[in-house]
Figure 1 (cartoon, rainbow, N blue to C red):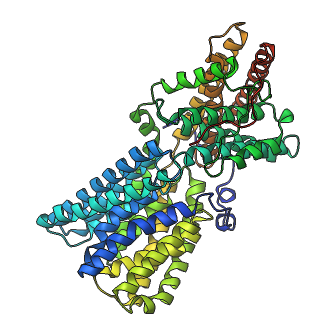
Figure 2 (cartoon, helix red, strand yellow; figure 1 turned 180 degrees about the vertical axis):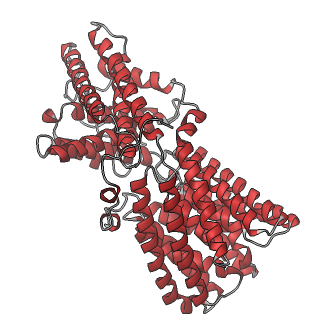
Figure 3 (cartoon, rainbow, N blue to C red; figure 1 turned 135 degrees about the vertical axis):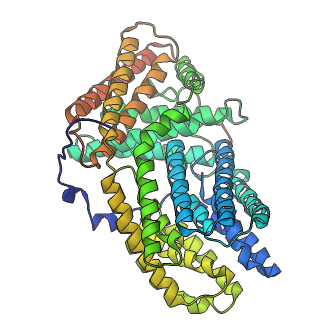
Length: 577
């Protein structure tokens, strides 16, 4: 925490938009993948339980099935690990919840345990960048399990059901690898190329638009590198990986020299990455020709990638410490929301707890936007439930089918705006409560609306009360890291003969530092009641960093042009995934 006198450069009321929070955006490029995956993961366990007449156990299989929502943007080797950890994390949360529920029925204790679990899940998901959907699904599962009547003897069986469904969800998540094994890394590379093309078009136009496009371009390129660097180095598809790396290098070159970039060519490469066809050949990214990819320049470039592959990752503890204020917000807000729901006599305080847990984002401004989206979506979803309840009550088969329909709709809409997704999430959650028996719709709707309002109000109040004054310190550290990366790059530029790959690795390190600086500055700008941020230092660091990136591109281009010509090749990399 900073001891400096807190100030707020911008009045709080100007930072809390209303209409903008509800504006729909473009759908995700792969919105249909999580939507289809969750249906494929949920349907078989629920239909089996339906056939056995034990739909009352569906809450436990749903816990495992919902793990299929995760890791759709990861390459399959990394996805296998992430999904496994998500399933284990889900089982851990459910185990704590079920054991606690079997030992006590004290609602205050249950809410307290649920709030602590929610805080742990939030911090761990943010630190490991697991998401979307992040911690919300895990918190919903563990919180609902806390209030399920339970005996200690039943816990192993219920955990076994969750584990079996989780294993099935893992298989569902990995199944697309059979048809398109390099799909995620192709999409990440294509997104980097398209974002770079957008910046090349915006360069020289409106300054604000150009700055936003540049930040988006560097973020997309950094995401592409993270995707490619997560692939195994000894993969049988290493040649494809190298070809994709060269495309990302071309995106880096275009970002550093947008005036010389050809947006249409970048988009053509991006379109060519669809499907399972050949990876486009770019040749030597430093000279802009289409020479063979085995040139010395390309080899040096990949040496820089290999150096990064061998770098030690940042320890988890170092990523957890800056998230302490967010963890305190989550624990306090969820606990107070649950207690308030209990005081009002609501039978399901975990709904208020989950609402509060869903609010907390990187800063107060984003938390406010999520609160608006959550309230609007939940209120609209309650009306949707009122409309479909008569149909769902026709039989248990209709109940299961309605849940599947809403599960698909939630994932299809949530990437456009969170409130659109919750129009389907809310009725699905209400229908799940009826797996153990039909309930009066009016009572369910009333409790859900009250818990939503309580959770949103109390949760946001906790976010206001727990200020994140470390945000300014993080900006200072991000500026210092960007300066160090720029100085290292400048030293390499001054050397007439830098080590092979060193310049490329330094280029990516500097670009990553600038992406992190911009994200940290944006997150801190959305907080309140903190000391004034070093905006001038941030701007200077960004300008100097981008000038250095441009100088590195010119150095690499000059070095590539000075080399002897290589044998000309065709215009397409003959690589099959």
